[in-house]
Image (cartoon, rainbow, N blue to C red; front, top):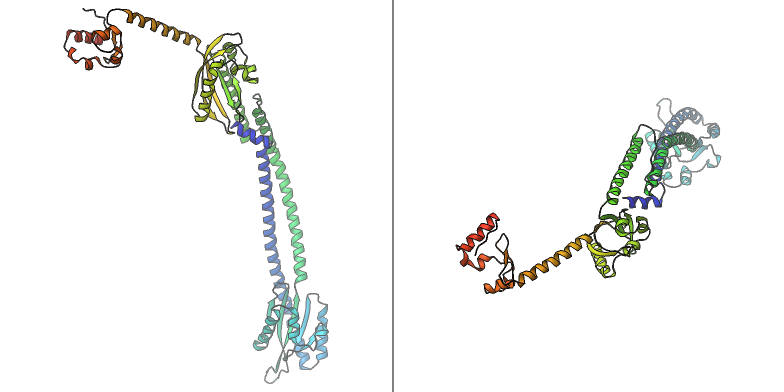
Length: 481
């Protein structure tokens, strides 16, 4: 875990805080953009709908006024006054064009005089796209059904209105002799542009309000959260760099304060445990504790070694931490291959490392040491051994003395003229001297490990067997001839 945090903090001083800031900032920005786009869209739709409704109302009022006047003038055959009346509408900036079309689709009056005398189809063709076909069809519907038709352009920037205007009406029969069409081209672009400008201003005002809220919120978050997290992260970085005396002093009554207090308590507990382990390692009577790591290049480096190494090996812990050869260099040349092979096997199979080797201390003494450790793989691929070194020189001396005593005893038993043998609790031979084998005419070495009753079943129910059985059951020494 420490190595992972070291790798992270080496890449960025405060990675988690920066990531949190970036995430929060991006979230606010995205939310702001989405909200502005959404509000802008619905405001535009609402404004467009309102403009269209107002425009239809204005067109309807205008057309009702014009229908009455134009019908009266047409019945009086005052075409000049019809043109004059329609020409007055040219001062209305919303009216792009107003035309009066007779039954032959000839334009007889217009706010733009250049269209007078032209066919209405010529004007519709100038609009381009499918507008001409649709408008021409609407005009036929207006004449046929004698009803007004109001449509919108494909881009919603213009409204086209067509109203029937009657001429040559018979007062007696109220029969319409002809149906003219009043065509109105109503421009919505100026009103739409004005509404979009107003919506943009409102959006900018709303953005300014949100930015102010974000700045105030960001400052509050910095004062309440970020600044304290920076202090907490700074302490953690000091701990990762090895300064276990670092402590947090964050005040308050919230989760960050609780986290700070828990970190301080955890550090105190770690130091307490480290102190106990250090005291234990430093005071081992015939041993010392260590941690050694194999680097990526294959070199070995001690991360920890107890102070008792000076008592065992005659070299200080600081010297070993600075230079591992201060300890490795003490291994006798004859034992180096065995130590290296055991270390390699432990690294390859991640198995326990256990080897006995002779060390030549700095004062010239040769001591037997038993090295025992368990490997574990670190997150960065290195291998760390936690182990202990025990001085087994005295044990080796006793083992050697036991071997010598055993050899002397065997020499004595082999030199006597009597037969001598020993049995374990399973009635198996554990030893027979040469003369014992000769007496029973068997090879002494072949009988070791075999059960006496299976090799000599005839001895059952003999006085010898009964006596042997008593000794086995009671453990009391018996003498007999």
